[in-house]
Length: 436
Image (cartoon, rainbow, N blue to C red; front, side):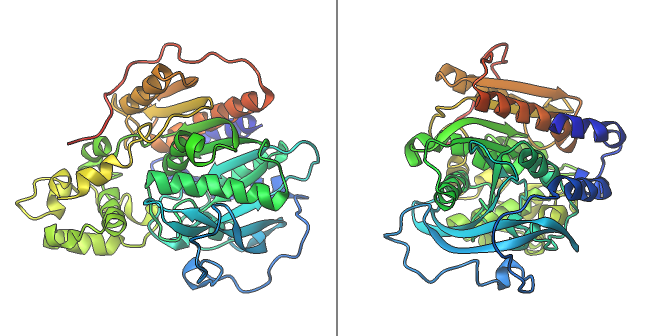
């Protein structure tokens, strides 16, 4: 189904995508979502209270001591109206604040949204990981699904969710960055996504044997890949049948020099510096140049669309004092980056599908093809059934268009138990591993 939908939009959009695809396709996405979700109802009464951003909504938080609360346990529940902007759809979602575990093993909380299909039959879950890529809570998927103004246009979230619902999947959409907005933090994103599945199964009264697929592109590749890595040890009871990750962030220390000075992606550098500083308590202000102080302040708490292309040509050197020639020379940064190398915190026991564009011989403009190859090679050497696909001449945004239907088919085949070929013809790729 998704391939048929994407085919309708590929030709008129891929050739003209200098802007993010969610802006270019606003009218189409809104119309498609309205058509797809008609009749998709979940029993219950949707909250009629005025829509507040997460920072002002008391649902996003708890004063409860979570020390002895089991991961995945629900803390608050509500039923909410699904909307896009001011357009309401005849569908609702159950949102749950649940207990999870942060990057450092401490109890915390996060929100997930559960959208049920209109059809009956055996349950199958998709944990859909939105590429919301944001240090600001106003960008949370749970808020966007309610029609919240996230500062960005509609994105393919709507198409993907609608397509999965139409095929009978229950779609679970976690705010995997957590309440502290820890963007790209592998363990926290993964554990939040896995606990989101736990709370969904508990809410729906499903057995742990219920099949689950993980699906995520770009920032959503982080909970997808790390989720597969950590599931055997963190949530061994879950039956994950497959994980599809596209535009994959594998080793952040490799991506840094790739986006340094980029026209389109240099703005992620100060935004990530903010996130790493807050997460690992690096006191990074003492290492910043005046330009760095100003730029980090400008990107603090923003959505991706507000900073990714705002600083063309920006380099990490410009953000730092002269005695620090690059971000990897700042104390604490290498150790923090080493915590977020995909494939180094565990080994999946489910089949994997990894995809990435290659527009310039290195990668898709932000993610590195050789790193994705290296991850696929590592998985195969460890006995993990893995498929890898590159999308030549396509940038990060453009590669989503062919990747999404490929990923959907991969997961459909895993749910159906169809045979597949793995670990065939995959280039060795880059060497991955901790940096000194």
